[in-house]
Image 1: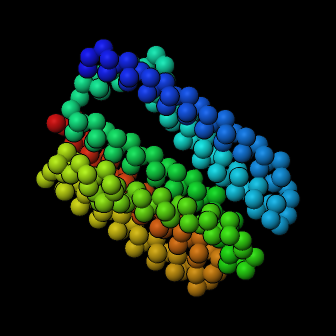
Image 2: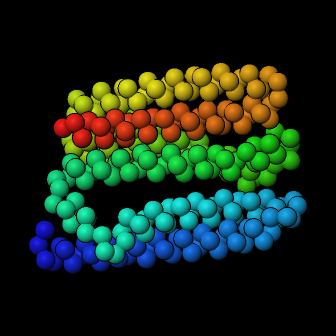
Image 3: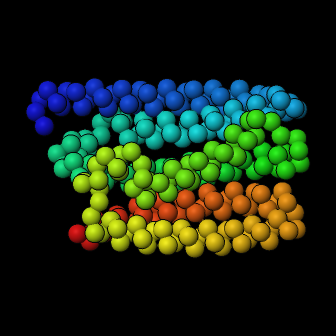
Length: 226
């Protein structure tokens, strides 16, 4: 990396750092605003809960971005000298650890919206709250399967025989988690429909999380062995 590229990289990291801090500030403001109206009923209470959940996700994501681009960290200079394959694989691994955490966070925040939907007292925000953890679970599984845009456009860097083996093991574990989770959800649904709906949402989220984390963990172990 020459001096000009180094300057550009430093500026890009600075923008990411301050962008991450901005997300944290926005998230904290949303959490504070939602918390101030949390005791309200009806639409106001629902909106407050959604603001708290969204704000928490902003805080988490912004903190991770800011920490990764924090001033004084020089490890990125070594990473800049890595091959494109190493950089892309590292980025994939970070996504497969981050998105599952976001999926589980949204799943925890969606318990009350699921109960309101089952009881017939739902709003559009409730459907959105339930959709988010499932969406992130699908996104995690898609990255593990190599279906996302980055994986498809950089297949020559991200696909090899070892990746296929790791993917098969990760998806096998995810399928097992999905089968167990949906079986448990069926049992809950026969007893209490609202509990069954919550269990089903967590089963879908857990399956996606398992696919991503298992893939990233096996890939990391393979890299250390190599």
